[in-house]
Image (tube, rainbow over all chains, first blue to last red; front, top):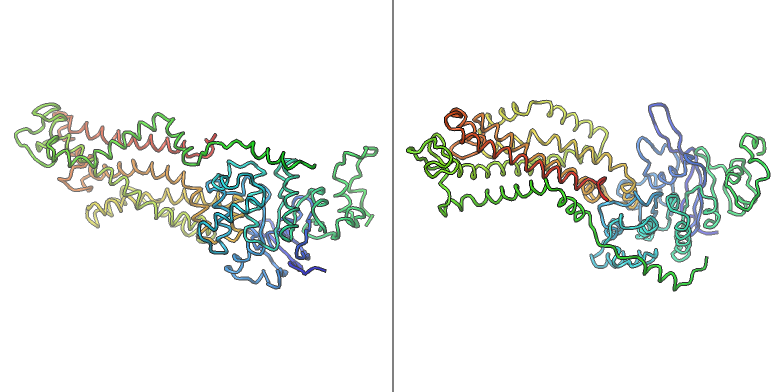
Length: 280
Length: 304
């Protein structure tokens, strides 16, 4: 068994609003091994993103991690000081966001944005940093990387921007990359390219990945293990084959059912959740 | 799915290297297409040239010394006695006083913005970035400040510290920073929620870097526009002060002072009021046009 990289124990993240407490993450326990790709699936608002943001301690106001422990390579993330957490972000765990259109600063050149992520953790000379940026862009297959570093985000297409985001995430060679719906905002052909790329990077660099998505096909093609979340809790967890072949929890079952399939004739009306009750 | 490597290579060749259009050159292009803005800019440049060049013109003997009184030719009309724009009640050349007056007006307009900028940025960025209690405290302070009548405040400051150039700059800046501080705060509040800020934070950027590299550059457009509109505002306030007699003290020529001096004899010698008034009017208009043009040019929603 591979070494455990990230260990989240009984994590609770809550939002204190004027209309009461919202338990976005409600007792999540999970782990990610070194070099492993884990998929976190579930419907919108089930706490996937909040779990990820909690790991980086970036929960937006008025949210708060109320209890639980987050251990990364033996370090306790929940107890880190501001300086330590800043060093931890990007360096140990990097994150890629859903919408590459809004995740890049529109008034800064692509190159200097990636450079910024790098120099946040290491000191580089100007030329050395530039060289590394070009190298990173080449690694994520941005064509004509040498001239593209001087472009602004609006000159990049959606797929290119997501590549640039991935390059930014990889710039400090983190041991874990959290990708929050990295392909949702992209069209299908570009999705395929990005998935391919992430697969290759995982093989080449051995970076562990935590993939947050509701795209079942994406999970099936990219992940070794799946975590199914519902209402802030983990309802099922296991290897990809097992989850797809014999889902144990009714929610997982209906989640899989909800994916429309082209190769399956619609002989019967889709089964509604209500009828699922009692199967577990 | 297997695509031959050669085809992939070709595909990347297809990317037409589009012309590098940066943010600023794009804005400059749009500014240039705006005729009024260009007219305003030309006037502003002319004003700056006049402000710097007027002492030289006196030395070369092209215009009269603005301070030299010629008691034989008081209150001459335009064109009389060799005074193109006439002379005032002390026999001083209106034209050269007009040209020299631009120095004070421009200095007030620009230096006041120079004082406003750091104050507005500091308060706006701090309030916007830190939010919560800090924001509340700073904004209530700003509100209280804003509630004070502008002119009254300036009059009090000037009468306490004496009407020197420095106190007038300071006093005008002190009543005008509120707008900028509020604008910067608003900008920061909205930009702070953007995803790229979260992305930058998730890659470990420190707060100073977030502020200087992300928040500030993204709000630069509105800041520039506000400062440009602030220039005519400050010029006007200085003219009002001079008119009330608490501005820059005579004999230094300022436009507001000239209007005040001339207005007692407005029927006998209208030229000594009309010309400085026109100068004030055109200057304000020129800066407003430039400001309008900049606002349209720098507005990201106008980008095509």
